[in-house]
Structures are given as structure tokens and as C-alpha cells.
Length: 180
Image 1 (cartoon, rainbow, N blue to C red):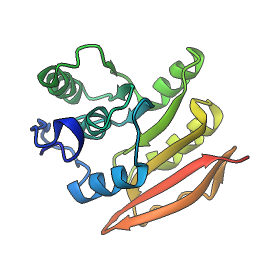
Image 2: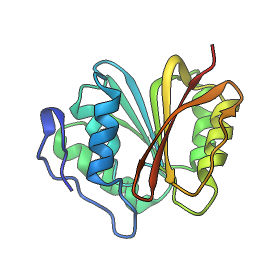
Image 3: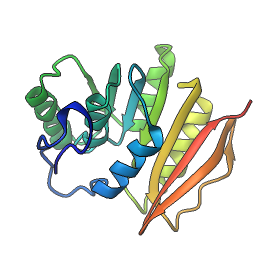
Image 4: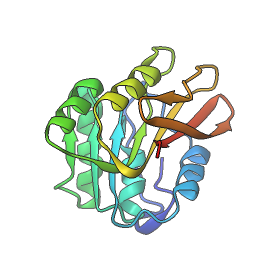
């Protein structure tokens, strides 16, 4: 897999075996929708290889935090970041729901949160609910959840409101922002 946009375009991203990476067409569409992300804080939940966060770095994100529980994936993320010269990126190796609570306790917030949980485990809904309780999305931030298109997410969770969905085959990107 390769970085598709920004200053690292064309660089190879190592992929751990046994994960479902975000397809290239979905990554491209996501970053086309996000537009200019220079200077934003970006959080990638269920990071896998870190491909989405690496795209964010390539497009100029100020900071990217990766959360991944699988030790093999954490090792690959660190290798991918090292190859790009990003030794200071934070990689949190724990359960995503616990990491959200921890980031909230630390007073952290992010302008963009991207979550790509494993399909068929109801984790998209659980993550959305957890994010609605532990407020780590910046006031004008975006939460994007990649999920199986047959998994229905609520239109609202706490003050997070669904405002857009884009479908790519079996994949759905659901976009949330805070209600005003």
C-alpha cells in the first residue's frame, strides 16, 4: 500500500497480515472531503497500519495520535512512522474505548477523529457512544467512522450529530459533528 496524497505521495506503507485496510479509493475520497487539514490535531482509532494517520501527516496535520491494541500492528505503525522520520508521533497501545477515556482525562481534543473498527463486532456504535460521553472532539471538529454499510449507526449520540454518509461498495463513511 502507498501514501496517495501530500508530501509522502508514493511512499510505501507496510501492512500487518490479517487486517482489513481502508481501500485506496476510500482513503482518497476521505481526504478529498476533508480538504485542507494543515495544522489540525488528528486521532486515528483502530489504527491498523496507521495508513489514515500517515495520510494526515502527509497532508500537513500538526499532530497525529494513533490508537491500536494489537501489538503486531503497533510495531508496524512505529516502523512506518520511523521510515518517514516521524519519531515523535504518539502511538497508544491499548483498547480504543480505554484510550478515549484516558485522552479525555488528559484534557486532549482533536479537530479530526477517524475510527475504523473491525466489522461485525458492534464496535462502531460502541465507539460513537464512548466519544459522545468522553468529549475529545474539538468544538468544530469532525468524527468520521468507517463501517460496514449494513451496520446502522444512530443519527445522534449525545451532542454528536450525523450530517453526511458516503458509500463505497460495502464500506460506509459516517460523518458526525457537534450539535450547535
